[in-house]
Amino acid sequence: MAGHSKWANIQHRKGRQDATRSKLFSKLSREITVAAKMGDPDPEKNPRLRLAVKEAKSNSVPKDVIERAISKATGGDSEALEEVRYEGYGPAGVAVIVEALTDNRNRTASFVRSTFGKLGGNLAETGAVSFMFERKGEIVFPPEVGDEDLVFEIATEAGAEDLESSTDGHIIYTSDTELASVSSAMEKTLGETTSTKLIWKPSTTTSLELESAQKVIRLIETLEDDDDIQRVTANFDIPEEVLEQL
Image (cartoon, rainbow, N blue to C red; front, side, top):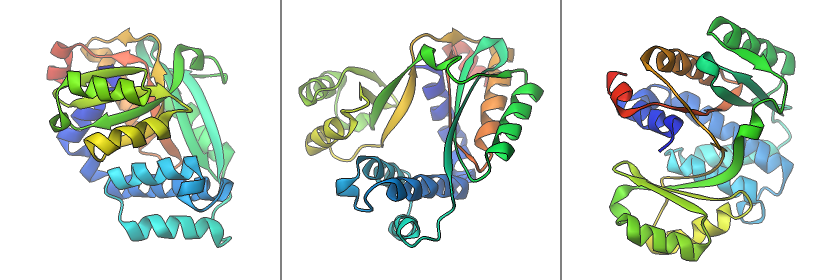
């Protein structure tokens, strides 16, 4: 499993997700509002909104919060949010993609640039690091749905591209355009997913020692703590012996 995925699991075990639950709800709600505003407010007719709602539900966002986020888009009182992507290099040359939804591009750009600069990285031009990633669909099932062979068979029949299984669960990768259909097909057999979303999947990774890992994680956490930042992706890998020290 790639380093960033490993770190997400460590965050979960540390309880970090609980500590930032309200912030997470806010970001997921913002994505729902933007998706509903850009397309049809009916999730069944709007693939992006359908995925946003599914991701919100998988993170235990209450139904009324989801409905309010959709209503906000159709009611005309939503913020004028703009999608912006930033690319840069973190400590040890790790490639970083930052995705934001902002009502003030200058404010967000200033924050991202200064954060990279203060924490051992540098902001680059759009396209500078994204060539090291592929746009993919990611579906996650909990480990108890079945063993790797069973999940692999179901994933293959559904049209998935790849599978990674560990004690933390099963991660299935799809093309970005097939995410919704593969997820729906697999859920008929395996039940609800833990997560279903579009990601930037690293084509290559940079292995980190302890000091570099600590610096990269600090950069990612600082970026993620900002309200404008929706998600941060990096192409690092942390060896198991280093993970244990974190």
